[in-house]
Length: 266
Image 1 (cartoon, rainbow, N blue to C red):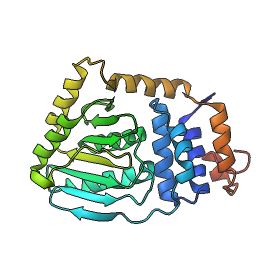
Image 2 (cartoon, helix red, strand yellow):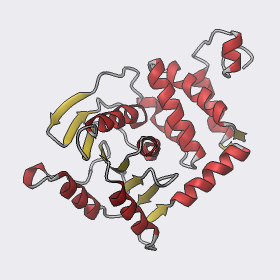
Image 3 (cartoon, rainbow, N blue to C red):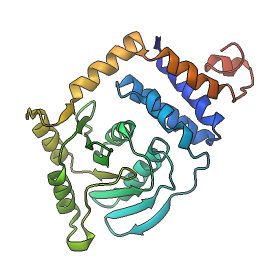
């Protein structure tokens, strides 16, 4: 079945709210899932996978350690699809008075839907690199305001990328960041040095290496435009399964709620 972006967004927001997620975070989570689905990143399946362990309480970010360039945050076992926006905003705040900064999150659940935060940072005129580890591979997302969409790379050893980040941040010795090796961590590096991010993206676009999997900016653009033209194709069974969770949320039926795709007879 094919659904519109509004249908996806509304459906996911109801599900987050049914799980007790605060309204603002439910909106951000719903946008993240809907955009991931429109980019061909199976956002709805990711939501379904994380639903049993989703934390309804979203606390203020707990900073475990912070220095001039790096902030380490305790994710409190919360999903990356809910924490990502807050962490990206923290990166933006750090970049107000310095050219580069990194936020590393522990005890969370990262996934491909962090692509939403890469796009968010690029819309703010910033370059970014997001790194995380899955059970079978390391993953990398790179974005720039000069590209409409990011690139995503799986199954690649990204030690060279982390080395470049440490060099840019001026980190040495014990202060150096390391690649996430545990599946409950992710790192967002943000910078105002757009030319350097563009050079990294161009290098990836110009290299064909069968040892890793890459989704290019052109791939994402094609998926995005196709989804907007024809709707995102999703599993009817998955949609209905998640709908059972959404039914726990009773939405008042008003003219405004119906216009927004909610309420009785929506």
